[in-house]
Amino acid sequence: MLLNNVDVDLRIGYGDWPELQIAKILQETTVPICVEAKLLFFNHLTDLMDSPLVYTLGHEDNWSRFFSANKLSMDSFSN
Image (cartoon, rainbow, N blue to C red):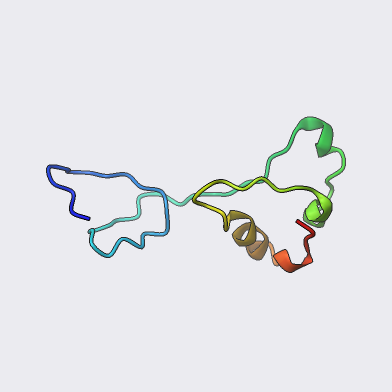
């Protein structure tokens, strides 16, 4: 894809756009969130095992990356 007449293009992703010159400008942090009523049930990340997880389109691997960064495997989860 050739971007004519564009000086800057901001993208979210892994930087795998070989046809473009890229420069990382910030590090994204993924943080799990929930409604306050559910917060009382979560004392540890493993408490999420039986809870439905919401996935962001285009970033379907966020949960596996989050759990991996916290030394947990998605294989243990029922969703």
